[in-house]
Image 1: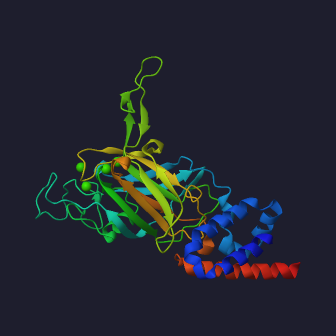
Image 2 (image 1 turned 120 degrees about the horizontal axis):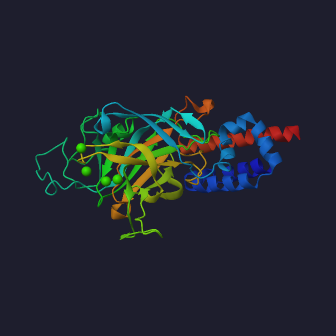
Image 3 (image 1 turned 90 degrees about the vertical axis):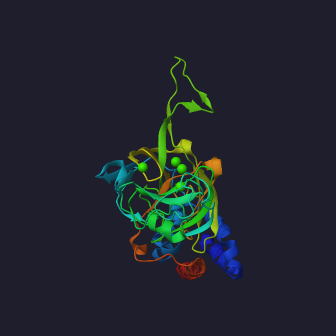
Length: 353
Ligand SMILES: [Ca+2]
Ligand SMILES: [Ca+2]
Ligand SMILES: [Ca+2]
Ligand SMILES: [Ca+2]
């Protein structure tokens, strides 16, 4: 009860400056959740109305760091063709329900230079590329796509959203190694934590390979054999955002060394042959947030530090039926709802006592 009393007071006390305190509120809630006794946790679980609003906090403490997972794709026409994501299996659970990106705000993206590059011709438009700029839309050479690839034109948020907004893993964002971008990606369904053991987001990145160089040198083991290891060739940074696009939680750099094999290859318009794909899974715990405010992810890459990630971002549909038809609420209304829910619970508890 103490927990909700404090919560109610906290939310009310800060009602006028709620946008500023969103992330602090989450942190405070998480800290209190960790401090809760098992009896308190049991009480919390019994309260359906409160769990609707705050129940997701329960999952925060039992989410382990992202485990490896298996990706199943349907690829009928080889690496150049459509490559549909069929399911993901992780921690013994399989899902085929995905939460797709439906809106992208490009905050920055190195502009294409039509005077440079391999297709230097200012008259060129969509459908070809000149390998300048940063993020652009790209697809398998023979794959279907919602629109022509952005090519030598800078992509719009709508272009990127269209390429992320389907399960065709051969519709991607291609990024030049020297380029930088920051993009906010929002999902069609609410992002909710659950106890399925599956991550909330998956990123597939083209360029997974066997490395024989480490720190610029060929490494050898004690027997003198060249050390080969599997890794991606690009990294990407991610951070949770709320519905207004404010960053929340902590920044997370997914490095190329931590990629795992996604088990398939793609050959897109910007490359001359098939490349293997690696993957990362991301949980809300990895991002240091509960799902109270999460509406999407901010993805970013900074030149050679990330080396031009070529990726598809797919969310997983949560296993929380009570949220299934809901769309992502605005942060303000969520907090107000939280305050009301907390108050109702507090009053009920008082009566019972
Ligand atoms: Ca390009
Ligand atoms: Ca890459
Ligand atoms: Ca190609
Ligand atoms: Ca690249």
